[in-house]
Image 1 (cartoon, rainbow, N blue to C red):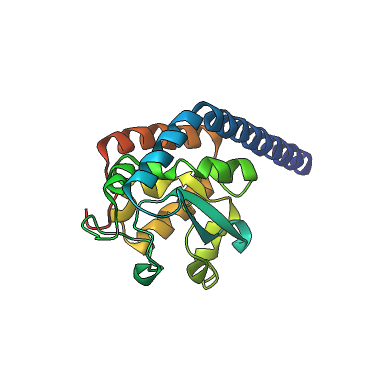
Image 2: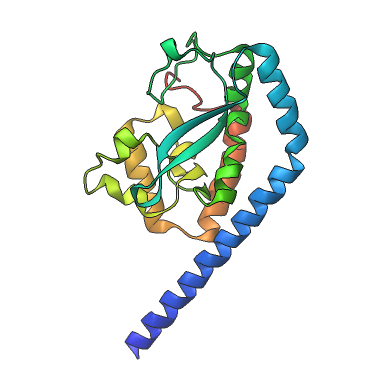
Length: 206
């Protein structure tokens, strides 16, 4: 009987994850369509503000360590000589454009990751994707971050974001994976909305 109950619970959990994934995909697709005018406006402002592409595209480590290309609105001057591979950016970083400061403070630069959700690379909620140079060298504990799709937001984002240390982010992400469910994801999404309004933890020196 216990074995049968376990099998039923696993089947229900599988269906729950499937339904959640379909809902997230439909939601991301709907947002992409509804926000297409905003995408056009932001794209025009980026082009007027500085030379370079509208989108910043970079390789990241995703679920099970698979690499994928993440999409963001470009917030920095497009100068290969000044490009660095680090993710943490200081508020007074001279590479950030005028429009880029606005996009970063409002987190609008993250909107193109809706494309990643539709493509299946990312989820709405999950550990933030980091550089392959990091994910390819994770230890066994850190590899737990790669058991789920990376998210546009996550527990670390509502708990301090870039003000957190790397180890603190890892611990929070693994804690999230152990408690992951639809209600918890909704809670994180709601908290993310308030964090974005307050512009908390945008830069690593905050």
